[in-house]
Length: 138
Image (cartoon, rainbow, N blue to C red; front, top):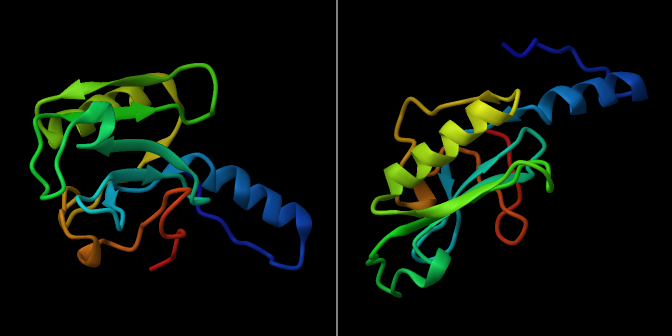
């Protein structure tokens, strides 16, 4: 369990401590603004740690149809990583989540509403990729 924080925004040490904790928290899966949407997990600082997409590996068409879902995750940019293709989005997400649970000391948050939502406008406040929407707080 990740500790709760009190942050003094005028104290550099307090901010660094918050960053260390937020870096180890992974937010729920959320679609980005692509069409068809890619699904991402970001850490508490908004850095993408996982991606599931019908476009990875050449799958998908412009109407959202797909023959498979590609996934990849390399949270620290080096070392342990995973990638592959699964038949469904949920199977690809499960592969990434199992990988994260096995190799990294993260707190992985889930969304009780609909973690596999397909509508970017109905996301749950956790957009985030390097090249689409910026991370935003709810």
